[in-house]
Length: 75
Image (tube, rainbow, N blue to C red; front, side):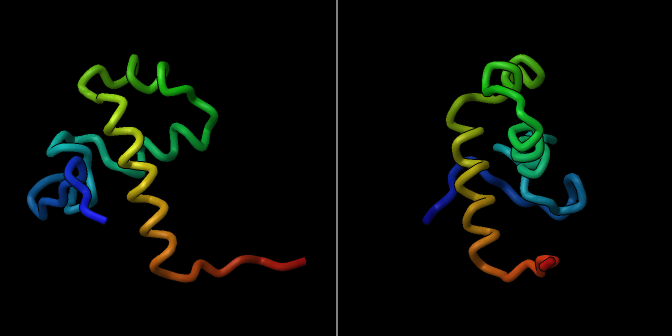
């Protein structure tokens, strides 16, 4: 899958994946969704974002998780 809205620049935000070269990390957007914020609330908080940015951030996060195993605590 090719990501056209996710950028990585070692000189910006420590090289973390961001949205379209903006200083908005993918992790921030995904975290806002995980915290229960609606797309409308996220777009209001970050007016430079677009619907497609949020969608691609989720796709990127999904691929990132698919690429490695995260240890889980079992009970």
